[in-house]
Length: 273
Image (cartoon, rainbow, N blue to C red; front, top):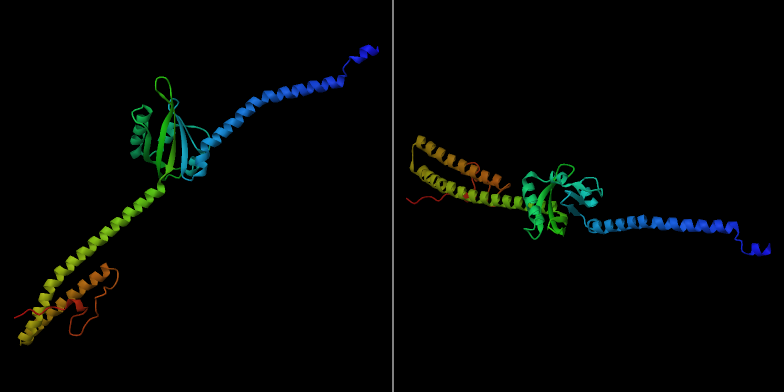
């Protein structure tokens, strides 16, 4: 009886060991899927890491055979779309490309996918969720092909160029405005010369005639000619002031004996007899 008791294992110890073995086996079975999920998350973090660190920058991953494309969540959020990790159909995103830019974008991408171009780089406009067009630069390269040379995977980047294009548009607008201002200044200078030259002659001869005629009627006529000349000269001065958006520095007040608005820069030269 003592001999048989010496080799018998207690029941509680047997049940505890079995429980531990089952727990260890369960953890081993679960380790595979958990490790896979962790690895997938780490790969996703590495894939989108650069996009998360740089505003206005995105990454895309294209499957040409399935016509699916995966964009970084931050890039989708920048455009106002749902920042998901799900892939979309290429048709969905091509529908968001500006109609005037779509053909060029597709041609550049197709050329690289077929191997006739070393790389893919193109600028185009992309519609954001609020309907506005944003200029983007897309670059990419095929990273996997099958035995027949067909592209299986293509990855690339997207850069938001909207601020640069807006700055360029403002610069062009400023250049056009400056060119228009120069053209206006040149026109006014020519017009001023063309108007003042005959007006100076008219006023000079009117002053000569005023001292040469004796009848009251003739003096009135000459005075009318001189008065009209000074009035026209004042109109020219006023027009130049308005064009310059302020008084010209060489414009003087009306002087006695000259018509209203007469200017010191309009002093006519009396023609020699």
